[in-house]
Structure formats: C-alpha cells, structure tokens
Length: 239
Image (cartoon, rainbow, N blue to C red):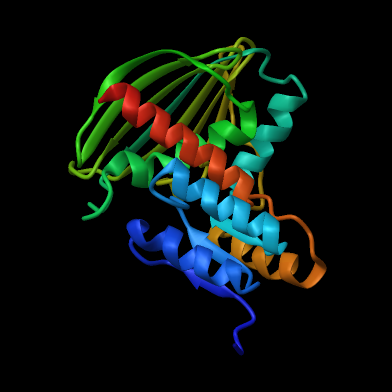
C-alpha cells in the first residue's frame, strides 16, 4: 500500500498477471518488454489501465535511444526519401526459458518499426522462428519491407539496424565505441555528431517524470499492445 510505483523485470510469462494486479490498485507500472505474451493478456492490461486511469509504461529501450530519435526526425523531414527496407540484426542474445527469441529480441525492431512507420496489414511473410533463432522478411501494406535476423547462438555480438531509403541509407551499429551511426548518401559516408545518453537511464527518467507530471509515456500501454499484436500475428503466420 505504500508503493508509489513498480518496475517489473520478471520472466515474460509473468508480466501480464503482475502488471495488471498493480494497475488495478492504481499503482503506476513500468514493465519490461515484451509487455505480455499474448494479445488477450495485452488487451486486459490495456483495458485495466484505461479503466483505472493508471499509467503503464513498457520498456522499449530503443524508443529512448538518441540515435533512433535522430533518425525519426530525419526520416520525417524527408532526408531519406521513401524508405524501402529496414533490416535488423540481433545476434548473441540470452535464451529465455518461457519465450522464444522472437518474442524477446524481436520486440526491439518491432517497437522501432511501429514508432517510425505505424505498419498495418501484413501482405507477405517469409522465414522461420525456432526457440533460439529467427529469420524473417515481412512486407506490410503502406510500409517498408522489414527483415529481422536474431539468434542466441554465434561468436560475435551484433546489434545492427540498417534503414535504406531512396535518397540515403543509415546504419546504426550499437557494438561500436564511436561513430555508431553512419549515413551513406551520394557515395559519401557521414557520421552525425549526437550527444547520445544511455537509453535505459533516459527511459527510467521518463517514467518517473510521467508519474510526476501526468504526461503520457512515449511507450505507453497502447504502444505495448500494438507491438504485442505484431509479435503474435507474425508468430502465428510463421507457424
């Protein structure tokens, strides 16, 4: 009863029950991704947050990545032209007992893709998902092609996002110490100077600020629902 807020970083299969219980008590919740492991669970949590007017924020860390924020601004300004393809590589990632790697690591590129392009219907999907690896190519209606590769196995850690547009291409490599973001345009490679903060610290500060001000979180329960919907839809289509 004395809790002012709660951060949930338990196994994914427990997220829905724990988060909904606290939201029902009117306690603001920060829950790690994936928000839930099914659309019905996500719908219940979303409805509970709305009914109790209680904040539920999801830990989509990349939405608080300053490089992603920079790219969003540039894309919306038309600097890349029409975006043709987005490619994500997430190699050497912990294996989770209760969810496969797609539900765990796939939440990262899907949250970015949802933020940048608001995808609708899936037109075509090719690939496969196992517990410890996934390789997918997805064509959406009115959105770029999305390619995702992820694996718990491998010898070299990879965290790379490539966005290809008609006018320019962006490559974000999170494993580099410097020049993490490269912009390739007209045969030249540029490295924007970005004062990048630690995304985890930024998102937690955002959570606390939203509690204090009543501001709507950037990664609220509605964003969590849409990403969960994408995760479940893609999983079912592959299987």
